Image (cartoon, rainbow, N blue to C red; front, side):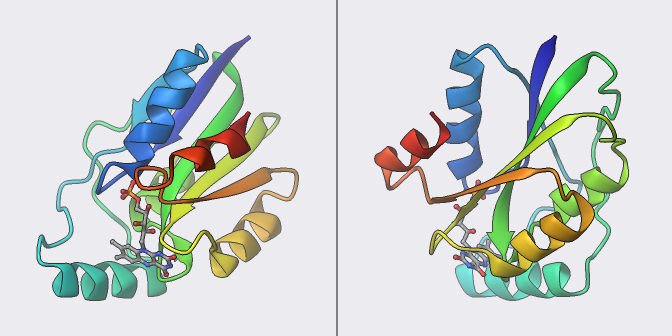
Length: 146
Ligand SMILES: Cc1cc2nc3c(=O)[nH]c(=O)nc-3n(C[C@H](O)[C@H](O)[C@H](O)COP(=O)(O)O)c2cc1C
């Protein structure tokens, strides 16, 4: 059966993970949002952190939620304010992951994301979770996916 990596990335760490899975034969679907976070670091962190805190519903661009042809789904998300990013939270609401093998690959500045893990354990109890510390900076982190 086919395997799919669905992910969001604002600053390209997720794209590096996508390249890894592409090489392994996965199909790739990148989540795109209508309104990106501000470019200036301070405003980006404040806006994204607040959005994550209130579980803001993003407007996604052409998100294809048909995953009928796949039995293994990997979800990739940056960590925002210790949580899943809001583009990924919004996409998850549109996906029926029942009866799928699910793996979450998270990428963060610290290599942790406690609230995100709690959310996944509560809502997708069978899912495997791997957290990477910014793979663009720390190449070896991708080895955790082998
Ligand atoms: C709005 C925002 C909030 C963030 N919050 C956290 C955080 O709580 N903990 C952490 O370790 N990193 C945090 N980061 C850093 C990102 O998780 C990290 O840089 C990640 O690798 C980005 O992935 P991307 O480049 O694919 O977007 C945050 C970044 C942004 C933009």
